[in-house]
Length: 204
Length: 261
Image (tube, rainbow over all chains, first blue to last red):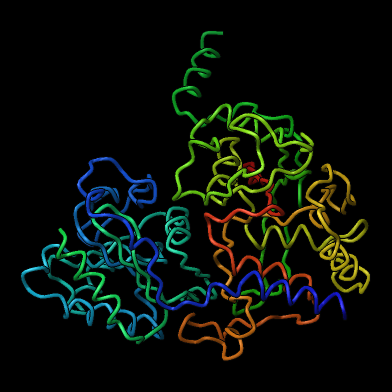
C-alpha cells in the first residue's frame, strides 16, 4: 500500500505542471525571425509529411509558410465533440477582421484518414459552410497523422470502427510554423486565441 | 556481385538503410499474436494483436551511439528542438562520447519519441504499439499472461520503487515467456502510439472525467483497476509529449512478421 501511495505521489509530481488551459508557448519569438527564409527549429515545416486537401491536391506543410495557421484535429463522422470544435473554429474565424482574413488559414486535420477521403472532407466543408478560401481540410497516412498529433500534443485513439476519443485542442502557429498558442477544451473562452491571431496579423 | 553493389548504393541514397546497424539487429524473438483485454482498450474491450517480432533487449547506449554516428541529424548538437527538448542525451559528454559511468550495454535514455522512432525506422523496424508492448509485457517467466498472479504485480511495483535501475546493464532482469528481457525492471519504454492514451494521469484532472478535454473519455474506462502497475504505465504515457526525454525512459523496436502467401 505504501508503495502505491509513493507511486501516486510521483505521478502527481510528474504531471502537475501541465494543467494550464491557455499557454503561450513561444510568445517571445521576435518578429525579426519571421523574415528569415530558413525553417526554424521549432517549426512544423520541418515535418516531411505530405497531405491531401479537400480539393484532392497534395501539399507539404511548408507550402503553408507565410500564413498564420489555426489548426484543430477532428474526424468528420464524429457526433460528440467535433461539431463543437468546428463551431469554436468558426467562432474564431468570425472574429478576424476582413482586412486580415487573407493572412490566416484555418485548418482541420483528420484523425481518421481511412474514412475522411478528400471527397468526404469536401462534403463536410460544404455542410458546415466552410468553403471560403481560408478553410483547409487535410488528411495524410495513419503514421503521419500520429506524428502530427504528437507535435500538437493531441492524443487520440480509435475506440470503435466509427469512433475516436481525442483531445480537444486548437493550436495557433505563426507564419514560420512555430506554435505560439494552444486552447484546450470545448467552448472555452477564445479571447486569448483570437488576440494571439490578431497580434500576429498586425506584425505580418 | 554488381547487383549487390547496386543494393548498397540504394541504401546509401535513401539515407535510412536497412543494413546492419548495431549488434542487436538480429536479436529479436517472435511474439505469437492473440487477443487480450488491456487496461485501457476499445469499446469492445478485447484487443487483437498480430504476430510480431520484438527486440530481446532495450536499445543500448552503444547501439544508439552507432546510430548517431551514422545519422548525424540525431546527434546531441544537431537535433532540432521540434524533435527533442534540451535534455536529449543530456548526460553524454559530447556528440559521440557517452557520459562518465555510462555502461555501453545499459539502455539508452534521454531520447525523445521522434529520435526513438527514427532509430527503429533506420533499422527497418518500428516502435511497438501500446497494445503490442502491453501484450508482450504481461508475460512472466512461465506464463504469456501472468496478470492474474498477485506476485506479478507486486514484483513490478517493487521495481517502480527501486532507484536508478536505468544504470543497470541490459539483461539484468528476468527473461519472460517469449524470451524477452527487461520489459519490467530497467527503464520505461516509448511506444509508437503513446499519445493514444486519454487519461491525464493527474487525479485533479481525472476526477470529473474531463469530458471537455477529451471527447469520449468516459467511454474508455479502465478494465482492471487492480492492475496498478499498468495504470502507472498508462498514466506516464498520457502525461508525456513526443519531444520529452527522461533519464529512465528508453525504448526497443519491433518488426511486423511477413505473412507468407
